[in-house]
Length: 119
Image 1 (cartoon, rainbow, N blue to C red):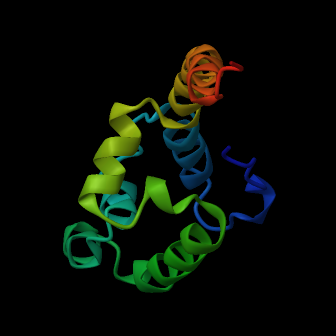
Image 2: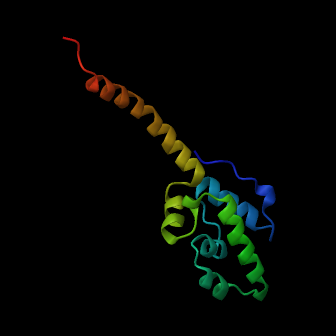
Image 3: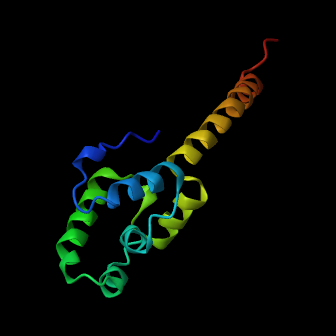
């Protein structure tokens, strides 16, 4: 189960918060700069930014993401793309709810098959 994030701890540019919330909740594209950070493509984040003052923000964002965002949502291209493809937190919760209904029946059926029958 994915936990709630305390978004009040996120500092930095005001546009980061709604972009990261939308990414976390629904997998929405957060913008190119934040995508590069989330994909752990820091070289691209630095080279594509037009603001030389972003280096401290990149460092802060990396630490904040590591501490607050689930590891399955960031840190590599695969994780980032998978998080978006699954619809973020909401998509994962919906999938878990759908999967949570079926295994109950199959687990019960498996248990009945495993129990020895009385002679």
